[in-house]
Length: 387
Image (cartoon, rainbow, N blue to C red; front, side, top):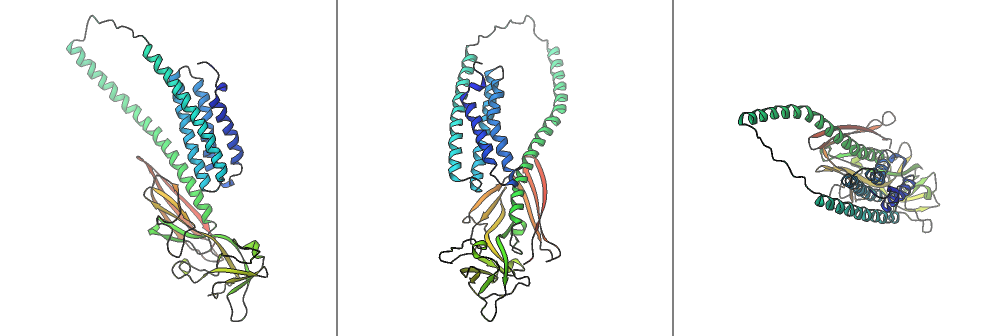
């Protein structure tokens, strides 16, 4: 086999990549520790470890098998990094740097595979064949029939014993894959739904989707005096509360909600959300029109972005940053990202709850399917609902 695996440049580069990626993953959100972070760690480590394991085998043919596995893991890491970039966990600059490292490792892997493959082919073609000694006596007709019958019996018994074991193993591995897929997707839904603006959650498409406004911040305000109610005197500085506040011009372009008690007040008759334009004296926000209702708790919320989770075919997509006054986020023109695959069915259910007594609850019931293997998964998310 020649040199040690430590001498292989492709192993050295992939080992350096693992060290680099481990340092980078420490910056990922803590809630991704058992989701995306774990998947990237597993796939990244698989690249050099399969090179090591393959190099320790006694034949080039076995070495090739492990090199192919290493290359498959590299492709998996490529996708996971694209996902990390689109989720804004890593910058575009970092992504391009990682992509360059992976491309170099991939080129080295392909060159090593070609080299080993050519040697294996050459060895096979030059191996002398051993002449067979002709038999002096063949089967009689009766012996042949008996042999065929016995082989059929043995084969039937063997298949009946082996197939359930093999099928059970494949089914278990498939269920493990489906579980990781659904767990990652549901964890992302859970995290976003917990930041929903109170009473903005709405089930759409007969339970196949759900939409809501994501919360950026919130605070208390002093009830306006007199007839003019197109402003909010807040109990904090605008720069601490608003998302798009410019201190130089004292302008903003944020959307606010005040006393939204049900989703239709935002989506169907948008009277309870307001566009903020100015912020005088650091704490006096001018809004687009007069307040329709006063919050009994003197609360207001700043909207971050609209969000939608929905099923299309066998995939779940996430939409955000769309115009919620004209679409629910399920159309192709809305910015959307693939969140999950192998989804046979999904059902969202929302119980609004009772303010000051019980939170709202979103129940997510999912059936995953890959081939003949199915997996049922159910999860509940508690949502704040005090307007």
